[in-house]
Image (cartoon, rainbow, N blue to C red; front, top):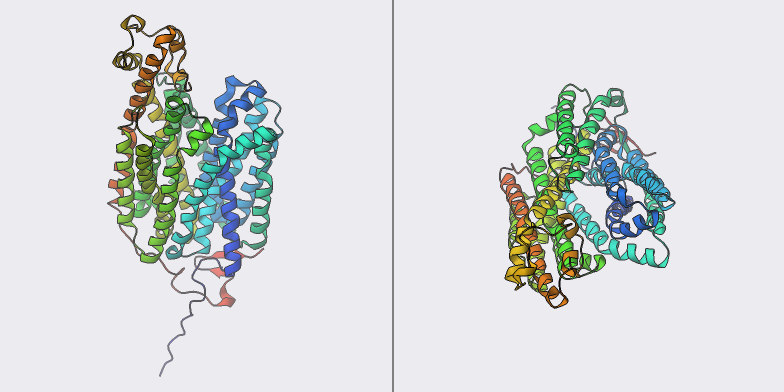
Length: 552
């Protein structure tokens, strides 16, 4: 009688084997690194006017943000692919290291161009933090477990959104704006120490001999002009060569990039992944979901500042209902997916709920009560939250472990590009809706005397300036008799609110497309172990597929 071959007993279901204690210490360090990236996006914005004023660089104001956006976006897929080849640990440490160096140098900046350059260095590091952090979760936990922990990423973003404006303002007032950048250093060093000590290195160094240099160059040549063109488009002139010309140039290079990738031995963005329905649907869904989110909710602080006269910090806290809904649903959805293994209709329902929340916001008016707007925001937040965790689980469950980093970084890239495009197009729509004819109609409706309401725009009228005025109103209000100024201001607030509400229809459409696309998702069972069978302890030096594991 022939003995049947022994089957290895599953000892550890995750791709990377570490002790339970080390696993959660690594998780904490990864969340700290992610918090750094998220905090930097919320802590700097409110104090930028102070920085620009001190460094006397108003003409280059947008480049402080654009430089960071360019380098962080371009490097996302590069880090993802390199982490598949050489391991998450070195790439995450390099990313955090660059981010800390950029932070230190930004804090030491004495001129505007120094700050722009050092913010670009920060972005070079930040490009690694989000995609590799998500990939590390994919390494440490099985797809069935990941939902429990990836939902924490939504919580981290919510905490950073809440703490950032307050922390930035407090540090600037008590010390100086330089310390806003220095505060990153101790947090980042803690994360670095834990990652260096505990995170194993999973790598395929032999594949690095075929590194996709042509893909890196053509991708950068495509993304950079598109992002600069979109930044220029926020000024409202889509007919300028600096907008459509740069976008057309970028699209041409991206077409070349696709051709290069189709022939690369180790493509930076593996095109064959798009043959996997779950992967492709997830890319479409996160792109359109972030398109809708940034095209709607991001403008609400502007409404609070202009219409209600709130400070930048206070307007951020007014979004607490949205953030509360986002954090709650992000965590709960991850738990639900982990317990049930089901995610398709959860994602469809969540995105549909987000579309309903933004649809209700199209009714925004100057006299909309805070309590009503809070309900609308809470619904939108509850709908957006699951997209922070669920699609990462779907993608990581659908692709081979050897391409988990590249797939996760692709998801991050589609999120960032979707948000950038949505923000730009929504802002363009908003400016178009806030025309002089629209303002004039609301001034008359509010009771403004006809003799003070010209049929043509007053001298110096610029819709771009109207988006940055506070509760005192635009300059043309101060040019009329004092007894009519309150009426004019009321009319302007009405026009502003209607224009903002109308621009949110773009977000409604994008979120509806996201929900519709997920309905075509093929729901695959979540894997509960890595490979066909877990290996024996003595065989752990090599994982299925030739993936080497080093504990150095």
